[in-house]
Image (cartoon, rainbow, N blue to C red; front, side):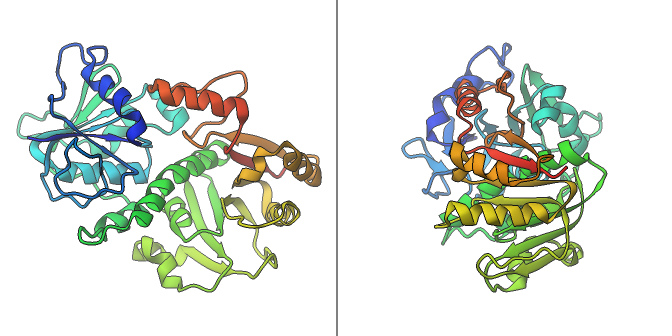
Length: 379
C-alpha cells in the first residue's frame, strides 16, 4: 500500500510534506499520509520501479498499473487545468490501486480561473464518474484546499495532449532525461501561453498561432487545447526536418492543422499573419541587434491586436528592453507574465500561492522581472 508524493524538485520536499501532514488542511485526518510516504520529483535523473526515500527518484518512470495506493501531488508541482494537466492526472489514476486515490491541492474558483489552476468545478467537468450503484462522485472535497480523485465506473476521457506521446513511448530500459525535461517544461510554458491567449482573445474566438524555433511540442499542445479555439498552428524552424517527426504529437485528425515552415539565418518572411506568435528561448549566440531585428520581423507578422510572446534572457537587460521598445510602433503594448504560474505580473500586487517558497519566488520575480514571459501586443 505504498504512497508517493510528487514534488517540483528536491528543494520543495519539506514544505510539500508539511502541507499534507499538518492538521491545518486535514483537520479530521481524512487523507493523512502514512509515515513511510515516499517522495519523487519531476527533475530527478534516477529512474526506478520501486522508489524509496534513500534516494529521490523520478515520477516519470513508466510504473506499472496499480503500483501505488495513494499518490499525493505537492503544492510545488506545476499542475495546470488544461489538457496537459488532465492527461497527467489520468495517467496517475492508472497508477493507483482500485481502492486508492490521487490527492491534490485545489484552488478556490476565482484563483483557479486566474492562474489556470484546478478548481473543484473544472476538475469535476473532466473526471466526474459515478461510483458503484449508490451514485457517489469520484471527486471528493476532503478539506480546505485539498481534494481527492477516486476510480469510478469508467476511465476519464483521454484528452489530446503532447504528453500522451511521451507517456506511451517511455522506456524503462532506456529512460531519456532529455525527453523528461522538455516534456515537463512544455507542460508549464504551454499553460502560460494558453492563459495569455485566453486573456487577449477569450476562449471561443478563432485564433491562428505560430511558434518559432521549437520542435513541435508547443505548437501541437496549443493546437490541441480544449480551452482556446486555435484553428491553425504553425511551427517555423531554422533547419530542414522530417515533418512527420514534428507532427508526431498530434492525433491523425489534427495533423493537417499544423503547418511546418523553415528559414535560414535571419531570412524570414511572414507571408501569413498570425494572432499569436511565440519565441521561447530560441536565440543562441545571437547579437542583440540581430535579436531586435528578428523580433521586429515577427512583430510585423502579427495581425492587428495580435501578441508576440517571448522568453529570452536579453529582456533582463534594461538597455536591451529600451532599444527594442523604442524600435516598435508607439501604439504597441508591453506586459509581463510570470514564468512560474499563468498570471500577469502587477508591480502593486504579489501573486498568491499555497507554497510559501513559491510565493517568495513569485514576489522576487515580480520585483526583478528577470526571466519572465514578455508579451508585446500590436495595436
